[in-house]
Amino acid sequence: MVDKIEALLTDGAKPWEYAESMAKHMYKVDALTFCTPRQLRGIITALTKHNQKMAKLTEVQADA
Image (cartoon, rainbow, N blue to C red; front, side, top):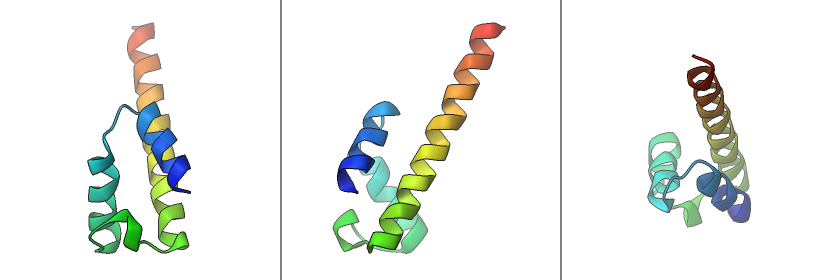
């Protein structure tokens, strides 16, 4: 799952600190290493949705 998070961060041009801050904000844990598998899936879902949102925004701006 950490590999998937890394891929999503790369896709969204975000640093590892972005995922770490998501873990702190969403689950009140100090690092991804302390996340449960369920929490990691939540971070993956959030990153996926964020990347999709940014892709749509970029597409809309390109059409304008």
